[in-house]
Picture (cartoon, helix red, strand yellow):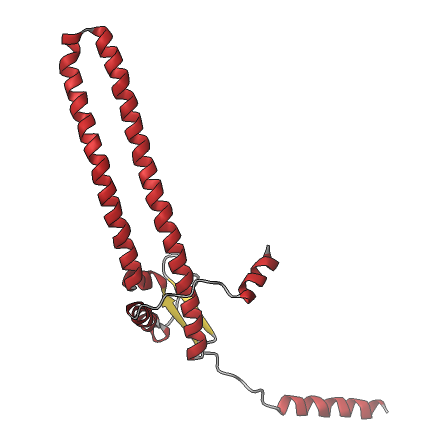
Length: 195
């Protein structure tokens, strides 16, 4: 009886080993995210927009700084002529003005950084969604990201689809189609579970 069980078990294992497993091809690729953001027209336009805003607002502030420097220069030449009491009062006023200009510079930089950061976050969300849909449409199992904050240490160049993604994104942008920045319900649910 024991020999029969052993023979049956061996027969089953031989039959199971002889079965060939169906292997599905896993299609993978990667995108160099730093190249993508440098060559994506909408990202370039966004960068140019905030550079122009910084220059415009910076010119206004620079005019005030120039006036302050002139007033400070005049103060030094007039201090001896107008006496110590005048010099102390005027010096305190100039110091207060200098401090206000410093705060204005910081506030301007912070405002521009927040505005551009919010728009860039929206852009990145849209690009990720676009790549996800692109991957589904083209039959990819995985699309990895490389670049500045990469998790891929090496990949063969033949798997690089950065140019394809940039072209598709730029065509989409030229056509005036907005990127979908909404996260789908499935993503929201999984994010809620992780928290």
